[in-house]
Length: 291
Image (tube, rainbow, N blue to C red; front, side):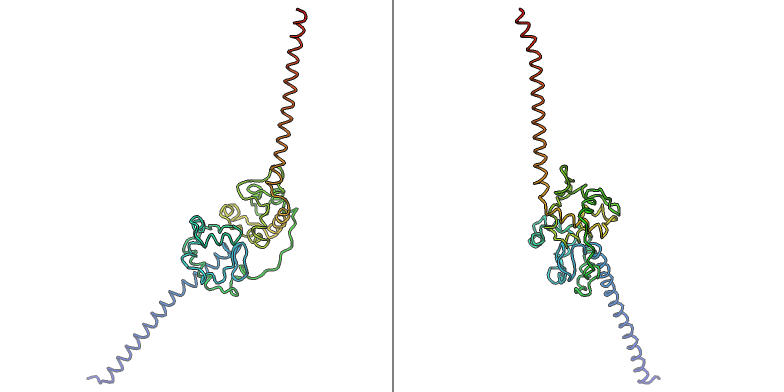
């Protein structure tokens, strides 16, 4: 017959084994919950650098859009998810906060980047881990200032006289500026005569670097502007902003050219018709005198 001590030892051994199995299970559960969060934050950082860093920083100040340091604590999470995935719908619905942001940032709307809710969750996970000092160096850390751009080269790039290095379409195909000439540029995109006033020079450089606008993503997704091209175009837009808008300069020029051409046409038509009448009247008068 086994002693009481043997049973106690067996019970303690089983208890220890049970506790070992339980602790292992808890560690596994904690790992499975922690690993996706870390993975999500890493994916969010990659998405932020790719899709967001051209307009936003984390602790680096405002660009085209606001600095996002602390935004997760400042705004409701559900609203942030909607703002990241469908900003156009919030603006269409006249959401008060969306309208306020639009007004505060020079009426430049947040573009719809086609992000899914899962991708938006990853971006928020990254923003939660970033504190402005540990944010991605690409997104927030200061970089050496590039050399100043040449407005003459910028105009050549804008008009297509000088091809973009990566094969992008010339800006004049869709945009106009006051220096584009009498015929002007395209009307698909907005007039860029005073684009610097809307974005500021720093914001303009950021926007040209990332081109975060849906209509431009399809064209420039694989044909991004080089750093030098961004600087040259920015210098050109700064210079163009110092002149009158295209509508104020060239619309009136074209009007007066058209008006002058119309007057010349009427004058020539009048002379031709007058000579034609004289050519008919003279023979008639002569024949009446003879008779």
